[in-house]
Length: 242
Image (cartoon, rainbow, N blue to C red; front, side, top):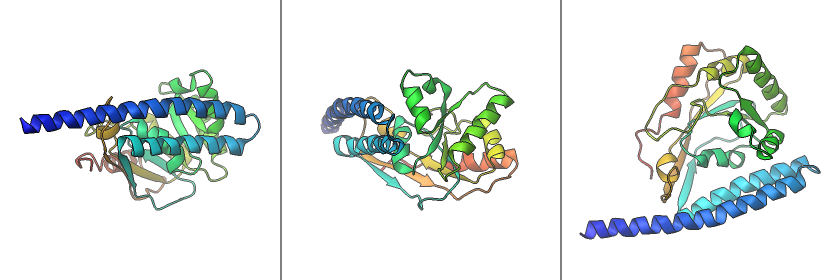
């Protein structure tokens, strides 16, 4: 009975902390979106600072209101690389502008069609990924990626294509190997374990982790690059969240 009562108290705390998170983060996000609309016509630098501020605000809300701390192990800026990240929740997607320095992000084309948001995202550096598009669309994406990263901005991709439950290991999307080949950039795989804490209605306190793998050189055969990235981004699958 004592164990059941304890679990009920823990659930009650999770519910209250999650409600506080929703009550603060989403209205705050609306203010950041408004700020982006005001700043973007006049200052690209100011606009980018607002986006980074939003990601920092999200990280602070998760830590202070829910109790989700972040343990990241990156070694710092690496120049032109392609980060291939496991995708378990919206946490890492929102966190990208805070974790990386002005990342250029491959995003689902559906997101880019959202009114206002899609145009704002394109201004920041989101590249629409048409999953069923042919070689011509792929070349267009690569051309846009090269243009946006000419000043050293890193590239970020979720090679599984969408959010997946923690512990699952779906194959990488077929377009990942093509992007890797045409870009000719080294890949840094990143494992995450945000799902058990964040990808749920009532979020849980704990430590979410990013684990940055060894840099993989360009020019590898498709089978090898897919196998190495797949293994590295799933490195935290068997490790329970802290």
